[in-house]
Every structure is written in C-alpha cells, then in structure tokens.
Amino acid sequence: MNREELHWHYVVGVSTEEMEQAARDAEARYGDIIRMEHPVSAKHPQMSREARAAQFAPFAALVGYDQKVEETVEEVRQDYLNRR
Image (cartoon, rainbow, N blue to C red; front, side):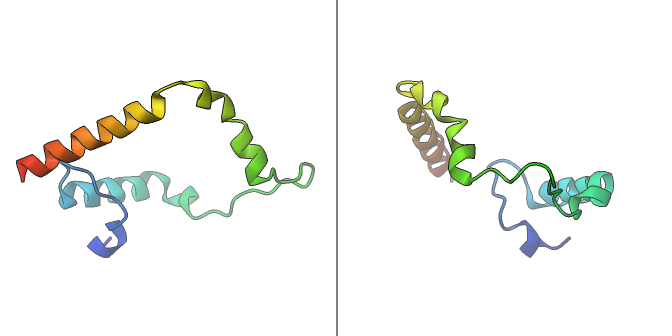
C-alpha cells in the first residue's frame, strides 16, 4: 500500500507508518470481503437517501449537540496548531 492511497486519512498523533500498517492489517484480515459487491435484495427495494436520513432525525433533538461538537473541534484544532 502506498502513501497516496492513505491521503484520505489524517489523524493527529498517528504516524504514516502506523496508518500503513493498519491498512495492511485490515487487508490481511478482511481482504476477502472488502472488494465484494454490495448485496442487492430481490425482495426489498433500496431505501432512498431521504428515508435513510429520516431514521436519524430523532437525534437532532439533542439541543446544543452541534454547537458542542463545533466547540470541541475548534479546541482540538487550536491545541494542534499551538503544538506545531
């Protein structure tokens, strides 16, 4: 696995070598199923994206959750920038 294939993943505190090793481990463990086609049911039609998204709508009732997530993201971002 080369570094270009891992560009999608950026984790603070995890080296590229560790990410490459994790990718090799995943390929060794799950390589037989990773590239399989997604099963399509002949009985049940595929659910629309809107219907799938609606399943998670109740979680939007967590008042202040988005704001707290944004605050945490900013704190982590600032901490990272200050350590550079």
